[in-house]
Image (cartoon, rainbow, N blue to C red; front, side, top):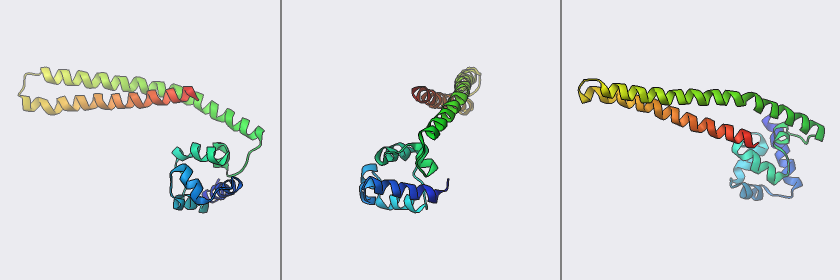
Length: 155
């Protein structure tokens, strides 16, 4: 669906809810200029706005992204496809979580090995910090993947 069609649909739904552009913006915490740009099709709401926008307009995200009201059978079909996509991607998140744990371990091993070398402190510090950085990246990735899996399991 084009941005323009989605924008027109947002405007139509807003009008059905008897909301002005300013009122919708106020409920969503965005400017009326932002709402106008969505409705004109010059920009799209960010994905973080889909749920609040749909709640205010009393529509589903699938309808927003389709730019039209959907029949119940279409909603069910799209819901089943989305559920299938979630189930398909969940194992990939688990693999990435395992890889992030491997990064943590590798980083720690590098840092320990470098620190035990019999060289000057100045020669140890950069490789040691690199090992810690690898572990830090692994930790950050692990947390992100764990949150994503948790969110998928809730939905």
